[in-house]
Image (cartoon, chains in turn cyan, blue):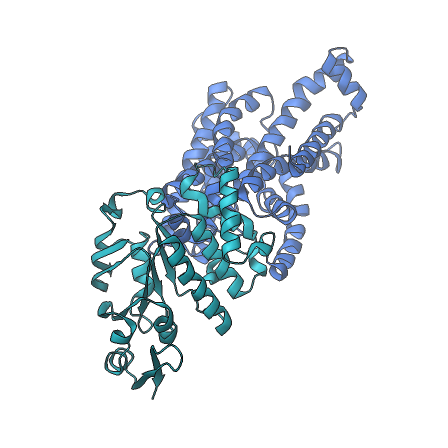
Length: 254
Length: 330
């Protein structure tokens, strides 16, 4: 599980995140929603340890503050936005880099590491892409490769930063289907920043609504995706109706 | 042994033989073999052992240093244009060497050893200055880096010129050296260069995996488990040591560090665990060929090798740049 306690982040004198507290259980998918600039990506970056913060990030008993990047990378894997990839590596090379926290400084991989990378590619249905260069992939393919790299890292916690941004609808759905399946199968604790409220409603077990660096609501999708909370957060009047198939909430701009 | 490695080694062997054979007198490869066995003609034996072999090894080592450090700088700064010269490290190292030379003229072995040390300290200082000038928060935008590098480079070059003009007795030698003419040849130079290169190139050879991770940006590299700050410092130190050693003995030679890693990446892929060793071998071969050309093109006069690398390298680089723009090798 992942536990974030009183996490605050400041750039200079400006506080970006204020006393964020939340926890994600193993086998649970928690979606971070909120308007642009609310601090979703900042929270993901802080939780993964790449920007300084005050407060605590811990799993079970261990606090991540005291860990080296390598030790931390054995607990937390991050799926970044796919626009940030160097194009010249092959998919295979990229996925194998997920083994880094389990390797030495030289990055020498063993047969077992390669087997894990092969399985990770299979699980995201990208095994046929192995020899391709990352620069030749579509957005959906790159995102699956990044997910495979994170799986290859073999961590109990997975953070995803807007994994569906820039993807076509069918890729958004299949990616989140995949993530939810992995959550159940591997008992992962997953924290995912999503800008699409209806995807969050459909796939997340719980939803955290962030506005201006604070969590203003946290709970089951139908408790957070209410007309009052969403209208207020996005400064836009919205209707929430019942999804005709799933019965979950469906947010519509008025 | 992998195919690319085998290819690079055979190219290197060929260029080594060419470099020993070609010069003011041509020594046929068969005669070279006789000399190795100790039954060669005595003049040829003297020329090979005392002149051509040390020079050839020095050129090969300098080329290896330039190829390897070029690849490392490009990896660290994630920029295909990053090069020891563009970011000011070479000029800084040159200034360090000239300062050391004007303090004590390096006739002794220890005098020779001090020059690369001064170069190295100046190169590290340059990296620190340029990096901090270019830094915005925790990131180093490429444009800032190149601008700071070029500005610092001009500053270091002007100081170097000032020192050279001020001390007339050293002018001729230092001028030839700066143009990339290998003036300090002989076994002493080779021996004093070796320890620096052993550490520098050894460090670079260990850096492949870290450089691979850094290509994904600092955030992803750290999320994958790399101690980014420490890894970057390690690679920068190794690359600067390597550059400094090359500059101290071979002067400022451009384009090897830029072109060779490009070709390696184009042919053999982006994995820095391959790019670094192949750029080291390729850099040695490329500088050897350039040096042979420099010796024969205006024979009996000799061109500074830096002129040859620039004449061949600059147009080639422009061509690579055009191709890279379209096909995204980076």
